[in-house]
Length: 171
Image: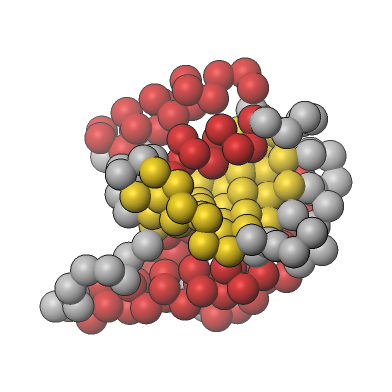
């Protein structure tokens, strides 16, 4: 089962994803895509690790998440990926073929036996960015969110800490 949790910055999407995921029994793997590129991000990463404590095994992977998902799905009941927009930024800045990486991710999510929670920012609700790189990022993130939503069983949108279920799998 794949669940996509979307929302804006500081909307509560990560906390919501953790609550849902921790309700499931079994081993839990957390795939962190953030990189400590400055002091603020390093502090944020440290805080998030402390919040998860020993309830999660953390795998820091800024780029190659598709093979990691396939590997972890064989021994973990729950996988949480936080977040796709940081992953998108990492790929873009590293010069990776985004279409190829997106296809690999979608393939890794299809048919996975673990419960997978995918956190991503909704970036398409604001103004059109003025520079090319920002527009490219927004377009990639929007395309990726739409593609993951299509393969996801459930999709939630979080606003002001309030989860709204916008897609539910027929069970």
